Image 1: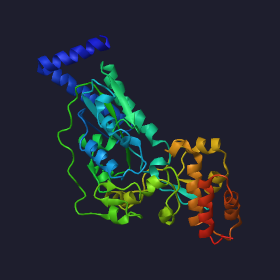
Image 2: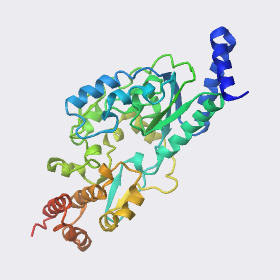
Image 3: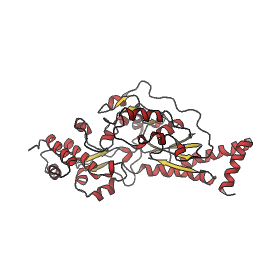
Length: 366
């Protein structure tokens, strides 16, 4: 039987008798099992209806300026909250979560910038592979299926929440019960008529506000509401200068910020039981500032190109590295001075200004 005939058979059975319902349920079970076998920690199904409250929230927060210059799903909320914009025949979405929690390596001896856990290696590639396994099952059954991971076309957290994978934490991350929040999320939009999850998970945070209190810049302005203008995870990767009022708070963060997850009780509880699996393959939990500030554009992007970098501009990474140098370097250290000196009279204002700030921090204003 070819794909078109198989799909027609599924849909005819589903509408005419209970056997079709059993066939679709069997397909659903096989698709979810394929995702788990493909490395996903959790999978679930939700409908392909317009994503609410994400649509209303994106419009409201964008209008209030809370998104700063961030684009992603804010660029076109009506598109990123309507699965039918990607697949007009969509009937369901299979949500998937890939766990990126790994044991935290020791800080290196050399001057280095810290990288947020989700960016240590290409965890999204592993997520896409797991979602691809789901899509393959659906394709083989004659249905269309599109994988969306780290895409501006789908609000992944809303999809995962509606599919019953977890609840929204006050830090706006999705918590998967006692598994915590160390997950990257994605989905498979399909025209297979899969049965959605019965109910999303209830809130599990209660009165806890450790993420709000633990944010170094108080960027969590209300439960689940992040002001990107204050959020270090955005400020160290966004365009333009890092606001001077937040540069000390950047500390040693070269890319991203994990503080609101580090203090979250479910995540901390996990750490009391085990440190997590060892970090495998090529990974960058720390990157030496010497490399960032001396590498060519091509070499730097070859190493960190999987990151979101505003305008794909390597100077955005160098700008942040200069702030990190000003925070953790030493004015008495010849290596620090050697790295900083070429940037003090750099022809690009973005780099020159951040280098001069770092020099003042290190007592090298002269």
